[in-house]
Length: 238
Image 1: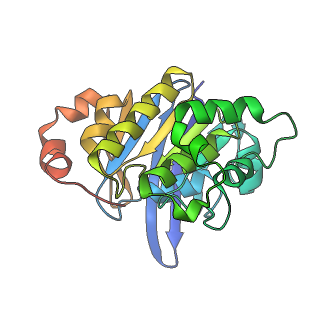
Image 2 (image 1 turned 90 degrees about the vertical axis):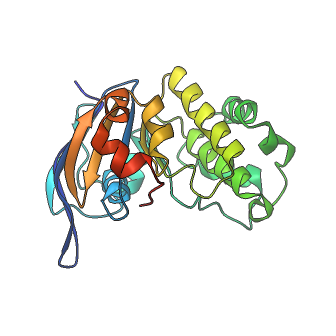
C-alpha cells in the first residue's frame, strides 16, 4: 500500500482548471519529485494534498485513510508536513519561536526534536534568539525546513526549497534532503532545479499544464531527451 495515493485529482480556480485529473503514488521511504514548467500545477498539487485548496474531483489517500476534504490542521495531525514556497517564516518571532510553532499540535517534550534540528542546522542554534526576519534567505529556508520537522512528519512536502538561493546553499539544502531521506522520512519534492531533484529522486513525475506527462525513476527522466530539452537546459518555476 502506498503511503500517499492521489487519484484523478482535479482542481479549478474560478473557470480555470489547474489540475486535470492527475494520479501519483508516493511509496514509504521514497523521494518523489514533481517537475514542470511555470503554471504546470506542481504547487497546486501540494496545496491540494495539504487541504489548502478544495478539490473539484478525485481522492487523496494517506496511510490507508482518505484525507480528501479534511482540514489542513487535521492533515498536519496525520503526519504530513509542508515546507512552503517562499519560506514564509514569521519575521517578528525568533528562530526558536518559529520552530516551536511547527510543533503546535504536540503536547510532549520538544527538546529532542529541537536538538535534532540544531544538529542538522547549527546556524539556527547560533541564531535561536534572533528574529527570523533578520536571517539570510538560506537561513530562512533552513528554518522553514526545521519548523516542518518539529511536527515529526511521516511525509514531508517541500515546495521549491532551492528557489532564490546561492549555489552553495542549494547544495547544503539538497544534502539535508538526502539526510532526511536516510533517516526514513518520505519526501514529496516540487523543485525548479530539475537536474538536482531528479538526481536524488526514486520516482519522478512531469506535469504539463495540469496534466500528467511522463513518469519514471529519477535517473530515467534525467536521461530522457524530451526532459533534457524542456527542463534541464534552464531553470523553471512554479
